[in-house]
Length: 459
Image (cartoon, rainbow, N blue to C red; front, top):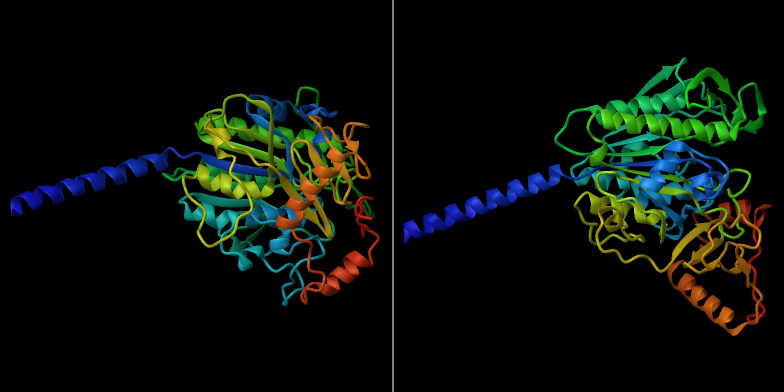
């Protein structure tokens, strides 16, 4: 009996060891993941989306990978980042605008998302045994609360002159007067991803380009920042140019191209998933815009040559609450029980597995709420559109305004969307004791206040 028990235990030990080794091997095969966020840019700014600016790197990434035709963030920087880092819509984070959010009592700035929610993009990827880093601008509280192991953050001042760099590098202030701010961030990225480790890495990189800045020589004037100029062959000319939006997009494309070459050189390209997106519509078009989907709609490209077969334009709906579920699934993990995440993983799309997409996506900004299906849209003003198969909302007549239509089908579909919106995306609590003064000052008494459209069938 003892001998038989010994063999049983030995067999169990071997099985457990084999299971452990298989799990370890599976972990070794997990992809590196980077999410790159650009600042203030709309799909219409890219030739890939039918816009005006050809960008060879992003064009290739989208066509050799996939690009979502309908991807939503929010119309403003901070609500978008709160949604991305928490996996929750603004009605949960209570970050509704750059000036409407729970305040830190010590400095009146935003109370960190990482302090209010233990499960963030950084902490979850770290918990899934990834080497993690955040690079760029944060805007959502103190970096230490987000669970990233490493970081290189831009120290913003009232005047942000991108011709030099001033960063918080793992808790130390590092100033380089002769290094462009964007270059310094990519230097850190290259160094971090080149380190030898048995663990895969995850990076959240939040860039400033092409966000407008105050002109260092004329602080009252805003415009695109200084960036290195590129010639027609995509090489640096040695000059810097300012107030040139296209030059910013080109330089951003150039830097992403350099990173892809770095991955190829270090033997990591086929092991890496690159996601690229914007945080809200461009400054003069979509940012803080309640009309149609100009504000929340952003470019969203996925490039993963070792995993994703060339797909090109993709019809599935995604929004920024989907990033956490996707990254955690790609990491081989699962979302913590007892917490609420509003998104849906599109990981199977990347890995070539069966995928059931979302029926709708949503966005919030101030007191405005959006809801979208593949065919229908309620915008921030409460107007209702039939979008059909069109996606270029900037083209006149692309979407049909049915806000006050008496057509029975139009009324029926609007009621369907309103039902989804009211059930899943509640209006802000304007009497919230912590936010009520902000709502009064920043919304109801502000020129950006939007009077909700009420259709005639309700009137």
